[in-house]
Image 1: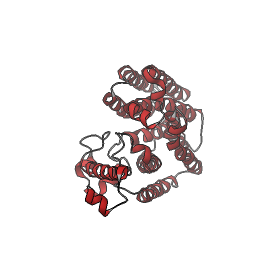
Image 2 (image 1 turned 90 degrees about the vertical axis):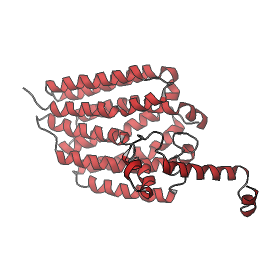
Image 3 (image 1 turned 180 degrees about the vertical axis):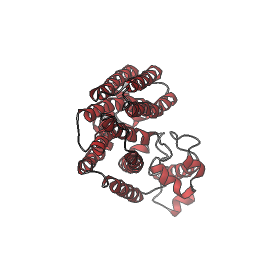
Image 4 (image 1 turned 120 degrees about the vertical axis):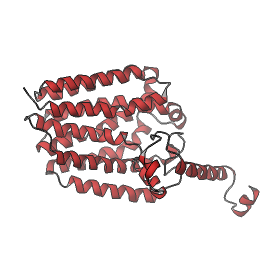
Length: 334
């Protein structure tokens, strides 16, 4: 240790300890999956070692967030044609799938660039590629630009209204990483951002906007308030130490009751979106399954059980798919 200090006099005290810590984190994060990634995810099992930090930066090892960004778009792509008794355009379904994957990757890279100092203080995020030193900030910017260009190419295949709405979403995305510094409700801003696909998808499918899309967007906002509050339960202690604000910290022990209320409002808005366009009976059957799923989550969540919180958060993929199926099958009217 003394020899190291003699050779590199700038390394002393905390700087030396930080250097050792970062080297350790970098080594460990190339070996083990990140804490909130599935232990058998495809990135850590099959991807070449050199690509893993980049795939982790884009959260390709943690697909739950991609599903949650994608599903409001799929739901609205189905809702517009269902009003006319038609099935969704499957070309749009594919385009939204690819677009959600690359734009979520770009958004995560941007979030990690902005949050790199905070992430280094939180156990769950300290091993991410930027705070652990696997990817430089400059490299992360290059990754972000590349993913954004792919997303832009997809957006330009759509009608002018959808293109305009896609560009408008960038303001929401740009502001999101800073919300946790200035408000106790960054989850609400995430709701505004993640559910933009509800208006974009409707515009892409129908060429216009209408009350069904706006109602679905409002329901998505409350859905996100619920599931992202559940997600934030994982970081209650670390967020308090780092000074990061969240709805879970603000609500404390009252979080489960608040989540139940958010989910009730989300389910009622989803019901209204289907009722406005007079969907068939299968919509109501699958909507009921969606509502029961949300109620089940709110009954099981506990503020002192972060592992359960992560599992419940991930289960929202299934909830969102139920609502998507409700809009698709609701096009059938006997």
